[in-house]
Length: 110
Length: 145
Image 1 (cartoon, each protein chain N blue to C red):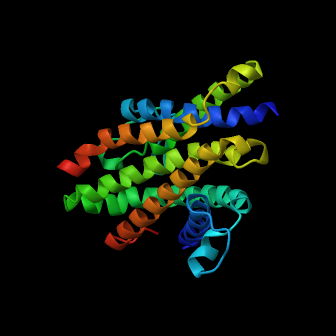
Image 2 (cartoon, one colour; image 1 turned 135 degrees about the vertical axis):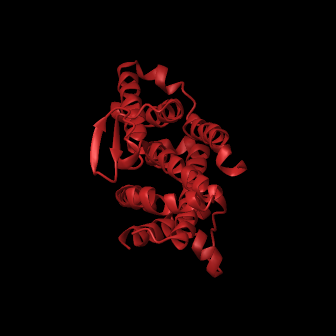
Image 3 (cartoon, chains in turn cyan, blue; image 1 turned 60 degrees about the vertical axis):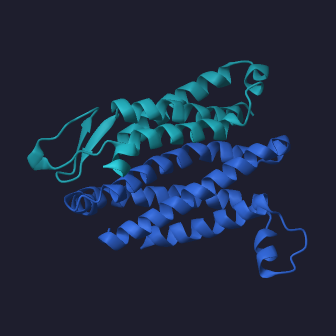
């Protein structure tokens, strides 16, 4: 089945998109929990409204991007996607976790 | 409460499956051997559903943490705990991204990808354990409902 080939591709593409999305702060939307309001893309709420939440937007940005990559992969002839090493489905997320740990290190060193 | 129950069910299922791929037991002679002797295939759909359910419930209560427990910890300059939750949210995202490949790798047609199946299962189990423990410890810091 063609769509089955898209699943590992989605898993490989997601972390590659998620790390820069999180690092450069590219959410599809921002949620402000104190006012219960949603805003398209990046929105920095005024101090009185409390903090904005970008995590949901990051997951959606990376999810949409990975879905597009996976869809395009289904259009390729099967032998070309079959050549992709299946181990990338865990190596790429593991590499992303290492980069995320590096980005998050200030929390653990201050 | 439902989030916790889903997380406990998930941790049980994923630990059974992970141990069955790390050290499969052919003859269930002891409690530990019986624990490892399960058929991993039978857990796949349940783990996918439980992971999605637990993550969805976690996303619903996440704003309470953001404007409650997190601000409380920041005021206490307890940045290591805040960082450990930051890592948790990113690991949950990585787990979400691994789910499709995990499900694919456990299909009967993917028998030649046993190494990938093993790595994805162990990775998912580690993510679930980390998320469970961090969530539990932070909930003890200040209740998240």
